[in-house]
Amino acid sequence: MSESGAVPLLTEIADGVATLTLNRPEALNALNRPLKDGLLDALRRVARDRDVRVVVLTGAGRAFCAGQDLREQGDGTSLAVELRERYNPLILGLRRLEKPVIAAVNGVAAGAGVSLALACDLRIAAEEASFVLAFGRIGLVPDSGLTWFLPRLVGPARAAELFFAPDPISAQEALRLGIVNRAVPGSHLMAEVGGLAARLASAAPRAMALAKRALNRSLEVDLEAALAYEASLQGIAGATADHQEGLAAFREKRSPRFRGE
Ligand code: T3D
Image (cartoon, rainbow, N blue to C red; front, side, top):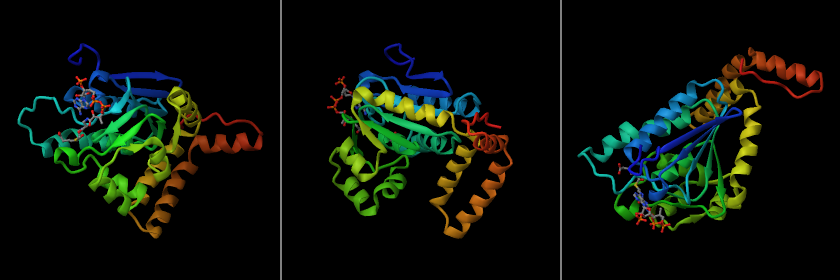
């Protein structure tokens, strides 16, 4: 429970899509311990749940997430420990989750809230949303994976500018820079995200999981290693029942019904 008695993270599962909603709207969904722990727990549960094929991460109210809760009373834990024990597992949890994760960025994302959005596979932003790299303003370095994700999305020079002279990035600018996949009017956001999530929920789950593994690995290795990894993953995908179903559906001119087997 949060200080207002509300559950800090809401989980709703329907039609193969788990929607995780950061639910501290009075604090712009700033990340306090209960919210961080709740999100990590939810990621572990959806990872195990075979009925969940796609995850959507969003925020309640007018914000996506304002990053670390700056009002939370510290217990003396150093920031390094807080990162190692809570933020880093969250970021790795999102990247290692073998299901596509869509960030529905409904409003402002700041600090580690930006990191959370960038750790997702896809980002759809409301046109009213913005990205605030707030770390420097409070004398901190970008963390929770931001120094890794941002240069890969926008290039090192733009990332340096965004880190050193951090004006808020509008959704349109984020789209131009390649930080988000789509920017849509806020009133259409959840319908747009729902449409994409439904499409992904009907795709072959094992193939998508393996594609996510390959994408993660591709950023670390040379072409030769990427080719070898693709071949080994294709060996796994090619042996699934879903591959047989895909072939049968093609030959029979019908839509495939993938069962994740
Ligand atoms: O453990 C560690 O510390 C290490 C990890 C660090 C990771 C990080 O995330 S560091 C970065 C932390 N985040 C920030 O610095 C962002 C702080 N917030 C803002 O800059 C602004 O609030 C926003 C740009 C996000 C939004 O601005 P605006 O004008 O739309 O809203 P506001 O009026 O500033 O905020 C509305 C309320 O939310 C307000 O509360 P009130 O006055 O109505 O009772 C404000 O205090 C609260 N709020 C906003 N951000 C946070 C927050 N409360 C706690 N923590 C926050 N991060």
